[in-house]
Image 1 (tube, rainbow, N blue to C red):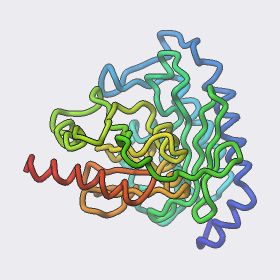
Image 2 (image 1 turned 180 degrees about the vertical axis):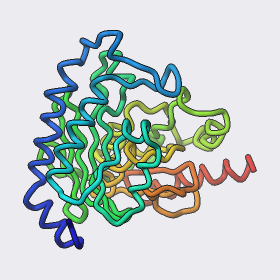
Image 3 (image 1 turned 60 degrees about the horizontal axis):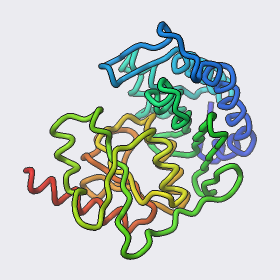
Image 4 (image 1 turned 30 degrees about the horizontal axis):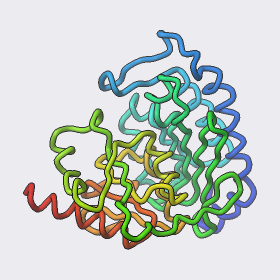
Length: 285
């Protein structure tokens, strides 16, 4: 079992490529053979008509759970589909063991509809600290990686999120209305103001990648599921960005955040978006 952060660093030195290979193999074996070929019996609903799960989600997560657990003895896996089956397994994020956080298909609705805008997300964390992440968009043949303190990369090229162009409206991806309650929608209304151009998000993982690349200025979300955010948050951080919750604290993958929160391509933009969200919260309160 891993005993300290230095040993985890050594693990990442030796096995980062093995994790990448596992993600690519899961995509090749379970995801891409079903892309644009899904049969009706391979798609199910979870909480409702917009909350879909497919055989690709389930089987890719099973594959990654087996391989990642073997790569790092003593680690545990918190995967979206496993937590759906056993919500108590989410508590592993608060334990001492290294945790693999897995979203086997982020953007399942896009995947089901034959849209290339989906990805696979894997992050490694311990005691709430994000250590490494992998964001793989197999239909677009893009792989983004990040290791804490070592930078963020897309297909081997370093990412720099930069700063928004002066005078241009901030491009902000927000929680999609199909997945939010009326109260959650109201919490984001502060972004509907001069100087901001909000739009509904697609795959959260790809929205984070857009921020890390400087193609989008920020995201603003009001749900906490770690598998949606962990990989992207580290990617944005290592590209030069920042994230803040409503209280001004960074987002915690262990939960207990005051929502909504933002992740942005630089600290000043994160503060600006948070200020708009705080102002709306005060008016609503």
